[in-house]
Image 1 (tube, rainbow, N blue to C red):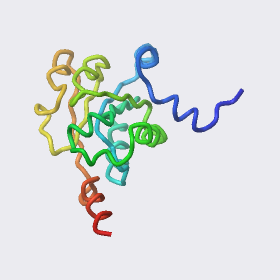
Image 2 (spheres, rainbow, N blue to C red; image 1 turned 120 degrees about the vertical axis):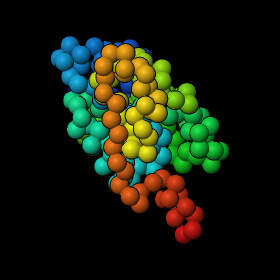
Image 3 (tube, rainbow, N blue to C red; image 1 turned 180 degrees about the vertical axis):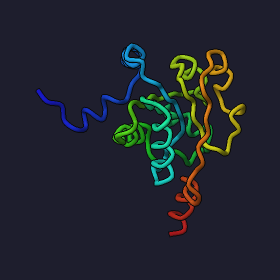
Image 4 (cartoon, rainbow, N blue to C red; image 1 turned 30 degrees about the vertical axis):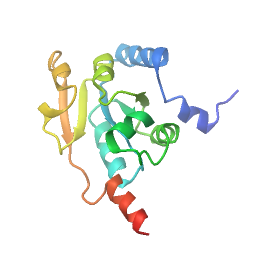
Length: 165
C-alpha cells in the first residue's frame, strides 16, 4: 500500500527509536549531518532561505523544533501562534529538511549531545562560541557555522504587521 504525501511528510518527524535508527542509517552511509533549531512559528521566506543554506552545508538536515511549552517559556504566553504539530508538519514538508525533532527544554543542548551533528548552524546574530552546543562539537571537531538572515523577515515583525491589520 502506498503512503499518502502527508504520511511521507509525517514520517520525517522523528523521536526515540525512529530518530536513533535514522541516525544509525545516515552514519552507516557516511552522511554529513547538519543540525539547527528554532521555534519556526510562522514559516516565512527568511526561514526557507536559512534552512536551505543550512542544508547546503551537509547531506542531512535535522531541525530541532521547540515544543509549544518551550516556545511559551521563551517567547511569552501569546506564542506560539501555531501548535507544534502544525509547525513540525510544515517544516517536514520542505524538501531539504530530512528530519524534525521536537524538544521541550529551553535549549537543544541534550538533543545536540545525542545527535552529535557534523555541523551545528544558527543565525549570524550569534557568535559561534555563543551557540548552545558549541562546546559539544569542539569535543569531536565538529563545525559551528552561522548564516546571515534575510533582512526584513522575522516572525515577530509578521506578528506585529498582522496585529496592525
